[in-house]
Length: 117
Image (tube, rainbow, N blue to C red; front, top):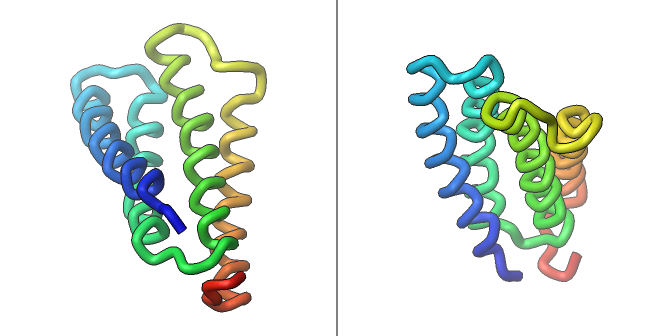
């Protein structure tokens, strides 16, 4: 299974999180720090899933986390930098996808790692 996307996303999430942390500390908008924290905290998870994935369930979990992170953080950053939302209920949608992604990680653990899964 090709997991380069998740490893790439881990690297860019970590880098963006650090850059946004700096921006937040120098007067960024009220949501920039939250987005930075989410990016930094999810980067190691995406990296681990990208490097260790041996099941479709875990791979799907990583993709859910990536999608949720993109929508959630994208909405928060759009509010600060553009003065608007991505779309109505974007942050709750992204947050729900993040929760689903973490539950999928838990499901993958219960199912065990099977290459043919």
